[in-house]
Length: 388
Image (cartoon, rainbow, N blue to C red; front, side):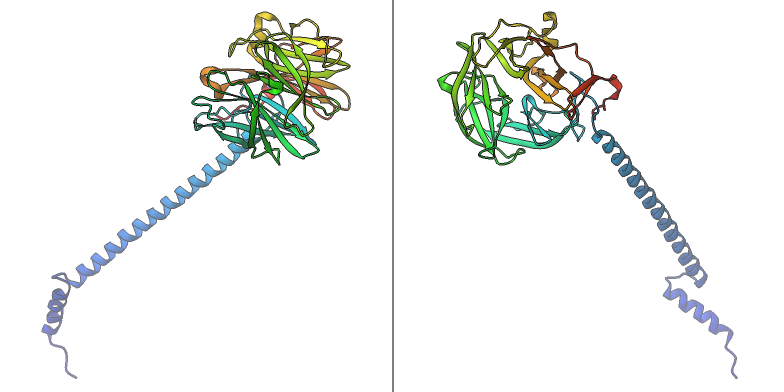
């Protein structure tokens, strides 16, 4: 058996150096091992980075879920003049609004004044609640472009919705005007559902008279009325037509120059509230009483200490909550902030009312049971704060 020549190994080594660009087999092996080490180090750290990243994402998601659930939890009180968060944690945007009750659900409509809205449109928002404290945003039920060539800065204010049981339509009335408030008409929009969308139908001057600020009133027998400010004469109360698409009969002309009109029927008397014509500035709101909507109406008296200017607010509605044990009348008002309209606040307080007297007590946090109609004051810290 022939043994390999000693030069054979050297020859093979030289041959391998030529193949591996002058590197020896040991050098190539070391290089390969080093490369594998670097690759392992790279992938090891990449895996650790990915684990840390996903762990961070998971913890962030958990935090946001818990955070959102905190903001979405139910309100357990009404805190007058404070920021009022909806189910999303956003301040409620339902200014100059009104409320109707369908079944067990309350629907609150008002002017949408959020920041960043398209100024070519006017918006009306809708919220729903079963307890008058926690409100769910149902969307902007009106997003309307100028319907009648009213021009720049045209006006849609104080939306009020009525539900017509005969036609099964939701009929929205609102103040429609141009920038100088010379048009002075009511507009009407209609929907098949409480949360819209509402479609514009027409505008007109009710019973041929100017109309600016409007209010709504539904009597105990279900009859619907419009309250509207007629600048030359006072403010009027008028009955709606059977389909709610028109105003058919004037009930009263109250010869007082007031706006923000609101009415309630309580224990045989009608109570009417209004504010003086001071624009955005608050003033001492006043009330009068009458045995019927036709009058005669008493003289107007203060509803709160006059030096408070109704605690800096203006009336928008009187809401009756008739329960199994008590009936509570809620005074609803707006605290306007003209320079920051999105931050305008709400004053809701249960009235001291009866025997021809009406008074708005000093604003404090309170709660209500809509089933029994009972209310009570509560500590401030029982309310849920708003999302920043």
